[in-house]
Amino acid sequence: MGLNATKTLKWEQSRIKEQEISKYLKAGRDFIDDSKIESILKRNKTQDKKIISDIISKSLTIQTLTMDESAYLLNIEDKDLLVMMEDAALKVKKKVYDNRIVTFAPLYMSNMCVNDCLYCGFRKSNLSAQRRLLGREEVVKETEVLAGSIGHKRLIAVYGEHYLTDTDYIEETLRAIYSVKVKTKNGFGAIRRVNINAAPLAIADLKRLHNAGIGTYQVFQETYHHATYASVHPQDTIKGDYRWRLYSMHRAMEAGVDDVGLGVLFGLYDWKFDVMGLVAHTRDLEEKFKIGAHTISFPRLEPAENTPFTENPMYKVSDDDFKKLITVIRLAVPHTGMIITARENSKIRTEAIRLGITQTDASTRIGVGSYSDNYSDQDGSRQQFYLGDTRSLDEVIRELAGMGYITSFCTAGYRCGRTGENIMRLLRTGEEGKFCKLNAVLTFREWLDDFATEETRKVSEPLLSREINDIKHQMPGIYEEFERYYHRIKNGERDLYF
Ligand code: SAM
Ligand code: SF4
Image (tube, rainbow, N blue to C red):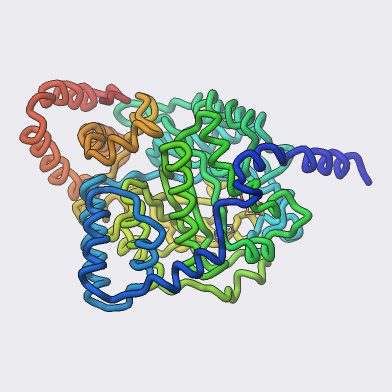
C-alpha cells in the first residue's frame, strides 16, 4: 500500500467515534423504527374532511405535527382536500415568513471524496471525475465573484469527505470567505453567513466550526430507510455507517451549533416513508434539545456524469408527488425553513415557492472553481450532478418580485443570537417576522443599488415602496429609526440591521 493510501485509510478509521453514537441510542436502537413508520402510514388513511381540517388547524398554530397526523396528510388523495392543504401551507408560510424569500449560492470547495455513494458524480470509483480542491486564493477568487459581481450575501459551502478537506480545511476556507470585501457600485459586497454541507463530524470538530462562525450545518440523511441506506452506501465506507450520520445533528447541538439542516435525497426510497423520517428526526431533536430543524432540504435525484444509478431510479418522485411532499412538510414542521435548489427546473421552483418554500439558490454553478473560471454552466466531469435551472440571481429576483415576494439578504439573526431555541420561539410567535421585514427591506435596498439591472429595478421598486408603507403602519414605534438606516444605506453604507 502506498503512503497516500495508508494515510487515507488511517484517517478513515479514525473518523467515527462510536461513543458519539451509542450515547444517543435507546436500548441499542436509534429513533427510526422502519416497521413502525410503515404501519403508521398504513393505518392513518382517511379522506374525512373534519379529521384533516383539525390537523391543518394545528399546523396553523405553528405546532409540529405528530407522526400519525403527518401520515394522514401524506395519504390524502381527494382533490378538494389537496387544495385545502395547499391553501393552508401558504397560510402557514405567510404567518411565519410573510412574503420573504432568502437567496444563497452553493460554493463547491472540493470534489475529492473517500465515499462511494452510488448516486453521486463525486464518488471515489467515478474515474471520469476531474478531481480538484480549492486553495485559499481560489476560494477568495470565487467569493469575490459571488459577493462582488452577483451580490450574494449568504453561501452554502459544500465539501466531500477526504483527509485533505477535514476540519482544518473547512476552518481555513471559512476564514477565506469571511475575509473578502469587494467594492461595488455604491458600497461594498461581502459574504455575511456561510452555511456548510459537509460530512458528519465529531463534537470536538463541530465546536471548532462553531467558533469559526458557521451558520447552518447541513447533513442530509439521504434516506431514513435502513436497508435502502445500506444498499446505496457501501458498508466499507464512512458514509456506510447510518447511525454516525443520523446523529450528526445531535452532536451539532451539543457542540453549540443549533441551526441544523436536515434533508432527504428523494428517489432513493418511497417518498412518504422519507417524509416521515424527516418528521421523526425533527421531533427527536425537539424532544432532546428543544430545537427542531432550522431548515429542511428535499433534493430529487438528478442525472450525474458516468453514474448509471441515476438513470432510472426505482423510486423516482413525480412532479405532483413532489409538490405534495413539499406541502406536507410545510404543514408538519411549520416553523422550519424550506430550501429548494437549482437541481429543479424553473417551472417547478416557481410552483414550489407558492407552496411554502423559504429559501432558494440562484446564479448557481456547482463545478469546483466554476464561478471564477467562468466555464460553461454545465460540465459533467466537474460537477456532482446536472442542474435544472441556471438563471441568474437578477432573473430570479425579478420573477419573485413580479410574484410579490421580496428577496431578503438578511443575515442578522445569527449575528444577534437569534438562533436555535430563540429563533424557534420567535418564529412560532411571529415576533421574528418584525426584525425580518425591516432587514429584508434594508438588504434588498442594498442589492438593488449595487447589482440590479434596470429591468429588475423597475419591477422591484413598487414592491419595496409597499413594504416600507407596511412598516410605517404596522411598526410606527420603530419607523423613524428604520428610515434613518434606510437613508444611510442609500448613501452607500452597508450592513446595517436590526
Ligand atoms: N459529501 C457530503 C455528504 O455527502 O454529506 C456533502 C456534500 S454532497 C456534495 C451534498 C448532497 O448532494 C448529498 O447529501 C446528496 O443529498 C446530494 N446529491 C448527491 N448526488 C446527487 C444527485 N445525483 N442528484 C441530486 N442530489 C445529489
Ligand atoms: Fe462523497 Fe457526498 Fe458524493 Fe457521497 S454524496 S460520494 S459523501 S460527495
